[in-house]
Length: 121
Ligand code: HEC
Image (spheres, rainbow, N blue to C red):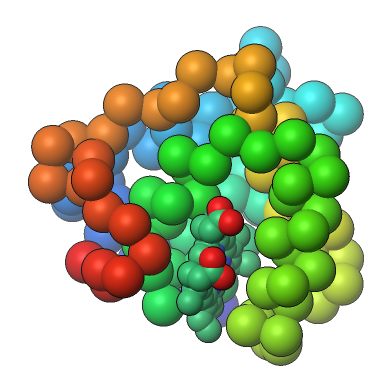
């Protein structure tokens, strides 16, 4: 598992993505009630489990309310049976605190900027 986690963030870095800006887990970042360690664990979950059908782009471009994330994640649960409930809840907290109506939409490299859910780059 450690290898898979490393590979997925390396792939994003290789695409020119500033991982620490798009998935900001610094102590003064939008980590909500999470510790930086929990945030990093959640971001690894997104990069590991949420990039097989589509890229991470629609995830980080979404500006959802807490209810909006709950609805998406309820509908999406069966897509990631390999995630534990604890991992899923940790990822839910991460998504709500980072990608919402008050946080700015992350700027991505041009090649990724317009990818929707139909492309698996
Ligand atoms: C088994 C395939 C699959 C996996 C794995 C998957 N998704 Fe999706 N996702 C889809 C499909 C298909 C769509 C487009 C249709 C839709 O909106 O449900 C989508 C759309 C989305 C969207 C955009 C739609 C919206 O309402 O904003 C977001 C955000 C999203 N997925 C988040 C995630 C997250 C977070 C994960 C990891 C837990 C994930 N996806 C893993 C198949 C998948």
